[in-house]
Amino acid sequence: MSSMNRRDFLRQSTVAAAGVAFAPSAFAAPTVLTPRRVRPRTAAGTLVFRPTFVQRGVGPHLLDWAYATDHKWDAFHSNITASPDTGVVISDTEGHERFGVDVRWNVEGFGYLFLTADNGGEHYTLPSDGRTVELDLNVELAKSRVLRNRRRLAQHVADGWQPSREVDGLLGLSDGLYEDATRATDETRRAQLAQDALRHALWAGERMELEKARHDIARRGRRDFFIGCDARAFFQMDPDTFLDLFTELFDYATVTYYLRYSASGVTDFEPAEGDKRFDTRDVLVDRLRGRGLTVEGRPLFWPYPSVTPDWLRNKSYDDVLRYVERHVREVVGHYGDRMYAWEVVNEFHDWANETQLTPEQTVAVTRLACEVARDTAPNVHRLINNCCPFAEYVQLKKWGERDALYPQRTPWEFMRDLVDADVDFTITGQQMYFPYRDLQDTIVLIERFEQFGRPVQLTEVGASSGPSRRSVLDGSLDFPTEPYIWHRPWDEALQADWLEGLYTLAYSKPWIEACNWYDFLDGVSWLPNGGLVRDAQGEPKPAFHRLLKLKQEWGLG
Image (cartoon, rainbow, N blue to C red; front, side, top):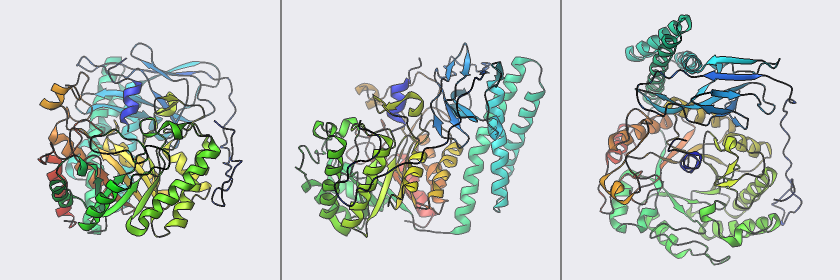
């Protein structure tokens, strides 16, 4: 097992009968989800993706677990396995006919990232006659990315963009190397050509997406766009210093209402049921609004282990409904129109589920909370926030650190179920901490949420700036022992590069209304050294200055 085990990865990528039998008020109407058609299982063979390790470093070069995704790129559970010796093996897709395989593969010169092999967009099927069929993992990864680049290039050119000479050269080089790999007869030679094709295709894909984004920004000009951040550092540094720095960079702030919370300087919002502590949050909301910031409250319901008190965890489904109705009405009503939006539920897509609800019940709770929020403050937006964008937890069958009791959905599938059930939310929210994916994968995934017809917020985004002297000494972030993840080992300049790339892609999409960094201050940030200032004295990091420069370029300063 590599040093990034299943539990560590999931922590970073960030029980009642089915159906609804109880409605405490008119806002809790019964919900029945339409079953998705899944083909019956039939006897099938085995597909094996054999790796050839041409990397020169010590590795690891292939993570010892993988997962499968369907033709829409949603993760599903299967019997897929991965190891350096046997490769990637799959023989039971649990009813999914067409699929891709997602593996973490070391591409030296680019990064040790999760990549999808999807047969160049056509996807794979299991052999139908019980045979074992072997494919070359190196070639399949290269083919999938090279052919995707061709499709993205055609899409972008049709929209009026032309690639630079650099991007055109990288695309041509990756295409040529891939074609050479398909003709090579020597296994090692074929693997090396495919690996080189993949490396150049990854660089080409990222640069193509960023060039197209900058083209769209220049073409459309300035637009309304929130640049935001969590504001709890108000309690963790001098408040006036915080506000001066924060308002220089941000026009949007999120204020947290975690029922139970252990971060320094931040008190529990509801340490005992019914004992809500509005006072300190009211001060923060008033100070932020006094500086002209737009404020969002979050979350109204988040049953995650670290923030869920026992008095909520042990409630029955009927009692959860009663609590949610009462809680939402009181909290939303306390602020009225002073909030721009409320994050109604957080990470409720079969990930944060300490109350152990069925998929149908999570939809019903979400609908109840949205309807009560709308009834209480109709002018305030209702945001659904999702984490784990690529949904690796579906393969691992995990609710946080708890074993999942029910089949799980990806964030996209959860949002689809909410739309199908006519849940009255107004903003789609998706977290995007560095997802162990390149920037092209990242924006392709985000684009899937446009179809739900609501503005999208990238609600929590972040990347580490790598180890510092302090983090090494206190043990919070040591020097890495694995291959670097993206471009080179994380440092402050690379953090700024990733920030610039993600914000540029987000700003180029007119249906994305906000991109919110998480967190502001190193030392207490969710990602180790993931803040924009180094210390409580407020020393800005390069990422702070890079974001300020982007604001000025876009006319948002």
